[in-house]
Amino acid sequence: MPDISVEQIILVLGYVGIFLMMISNGLLSFPSSQILYIIAGYFIFTGDLNLVLVSLVGALGNTIGNIGLYEIARSKGLKYITKWQLFPPQIVRKVQVGFEKRGAWFVFVGKLIPALKVFVPIPAGIAKMNRVLYATIIFISSEIWTIPFISIGFFFGKSSDVFGKYAIVLIFVALIVAGLFYKYINSEEVVSEIEGG
Image: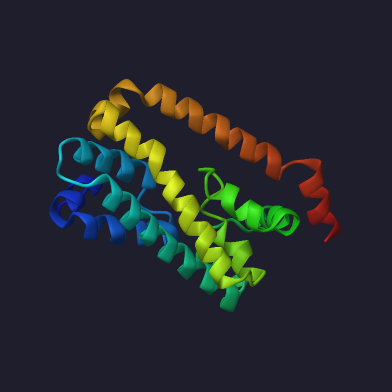
């Protein structure tokens, strides 16, 4: 069976493909939303896709996927989630501490941080955060998330061109964000909270 790329799925299925892939991203963190939106941004530039529809469909799909993960965490608990081996228990516990301290604000900001966004639905579900509030925050954050990556694809061209010319910048930004996240989850405040619990 031939490999199927994100670009091919978008070309064949259009908005439906974006919607389905973003559901998968919200639930399983695959495929990469950054790559998807960069490619979609290029197709917006060529006139094959519409900016508003891409942003809405992508954010809606991601929200549905995140709600799915939230509901699993809410009904099944942390042990069930960690059985998937996609979410390391130690990191999830540290994210839980962040959520317990900052609540809805943590959900909003967390969804905008690459290294953190994948874990956000889990502590929210375990804590049984209000469903309407959770879904609203996730959708708004998911909409905001689309903007920089669609812009990269729109202004700088196709994914292959972007990663050829601007990979260093993207990697540098990603490393800074990942470093800030790592520093936070290993901070004395978070670690002491876990050890105390």
